[in-house]
Each structure stands twice: as structure tokens, then as C-alpha cells.
Amino acid sequence: MRLGAHMSAAGGVYTAFARGQKAACETILVFTKSNRQWKAKPLADEDVQNYREAAAEHSGIFPTAVHASYLINLASPKPDLWQKSLDALKIEVERAGQLGIPLLVFHPGSYVTADEQTGLDNIVRALQQLLADTADSAPGVTVCLETMAGQGTNLGHRFQQLAYLLENAGPSERMGVCFDTCHVFAAGYDIRTPEAYAATMSEFDRVIGLEQIKCFHFNDSKFELGRRKDRHAHIGDGFIGGEGFANFLNDPRWAEYPAHLETPKTEEDEDGNEIEMDVVNLATLRSLIK
Ligand SMILES: [Zn+2]
Ligand SMILES: [Zn+2]
Image (cartoon, rainbow, N blue to C red):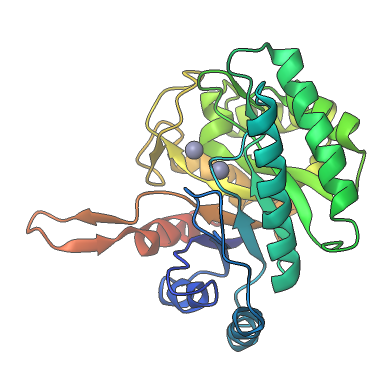
């Protein structure tokens, strides 16, 4: 697989490449704007130029994937928040298109005070509009629904929910799924042993179709199977464990697919020295390749 991590884009999206290179990333995941704010200054020609130059300079780091803002909630029962979310996601997709980034990952949403079906249908309506509105401006960007842990009223933790969204918003070649190991495990799908992994992947294939997977988030889980808690642990340090990741890493179907860490960036050793954890987690993942 192509292994990498979420990299800071502080100082411009292009700066993420140098950080990725330092951490031995073969692929990077970035925010192209502040993930905690709705607004973003439009990308200037210079930003696009800088990005393209850095991408060419770091030609061993690909593909780049964008993670959309956490504020976006296409399932929202509040019309103003739904509209704001749709507008914000559209901007994210267009920015990815401007930069030539092929993948954009977002959280499907939470139904809050509504119900599951209403929430799913709100997401469908937004995605239909999004795909239509960005067909010309960002034709090369695949919009990926992230598999979710199922915290609160979070949607996308059951494979059936993701299948419903993909079928009803499309079907579209411009949509897919980002498979987050921590979230899938938290949602109750076991991946720890070769047998459990095979069963989960065949369930995914039956319900959604493995061809819908475009990228992975590789996070271990601080909580046990099925607890629906979204807390990321370092690789091999959580309840998934190294063998769980080995199942993905040694599956030839994913040989060319990107996987990004979203685990804590630093830890302290006993002497209080800071350890760069992306380097450690990537080394752990690579050691699991047979
Ligand atoms: Zn995410
Ligand atoms: Zn998470």
C-alpha cells in the first residue's frame, strides 16, 4: 500500500509535501483550509502554482487526499446549516479540483434531532446537488464518504447506510468510500484476525462493493470492538492490534491504495523528549508487510 499521514498545511497546502517527506510518507492527507472555520480565502494563482511545484518536486508522494472540514453536516435537519454545509463542501471540492487533488474525504453527517432516514435523505439531496454543481469545475475529484464510528447520531457506521447514500446520490463515478479502520472496528466490524477481516471485507463487498473503496484511514482504536467510540490509538497500541493492519497491508487488492494515519503526532519518552509518532507508526506498518 501507499502509506502516509495527515500532514499540517500551515503556511500553505504545498508545505505539507516537505513535512510528508520528512516523515517518510508515500502519500499525504491535508486540509486545504482551516477545518474549524466555515470561511476560506479563495486560493490565489500563486497558491496553486506553489502546490503544483511542490507536488512535482515530491513526485514520490502521491496521491494527495483532502479531508473536508469537520463542521460540515449534510444530514442536518436545520435548513440553514444544511445549506451552509453544502456550500462549504462545494468549496472544498472546487479547491481540490484547482489543486489537482484526486480524492476528497468527508464525514457523511449526524441527524441530530431528526431520525436516521431523514438524515440519510438530507445527505442524498446535498450530494446530488454537489455532484451537479461541481461536474465542470472539479470533474477529477472523487468525493469519498468516510466510514464512521457511530458516535451519537452519526451516520455512515453501518455499511447499509453508505450503500444507500452511494446508490441514491449517484450512482456516480465521482463518489466512493474512505475506509477508516478505527471507525469500522468501533462500529462493530471485526478486522483483527485473517478470518474476521475476510468476513468484514466480504460483507462490505456484498453490501457496498469493494470497488467503492478509494482510500483508507489507518488508525488503531482506544476502545473495544463495537463500542461506537471514535478515539484513535497508535498502530499496534489499540484494540485492533498489528495483525489487524497486517490483514490490509498484505492484501494484494490494496497494493496501490493510499492509507493515511490520523493518530496523535507526538508523544514524550521517559526523559521528556518529544517523539515524532508518524515516523514510528509508519515504521510499524511497514514492519507488518510480509
Ligand atoms: Zn475523518
Ligand atoms: Zn476518527
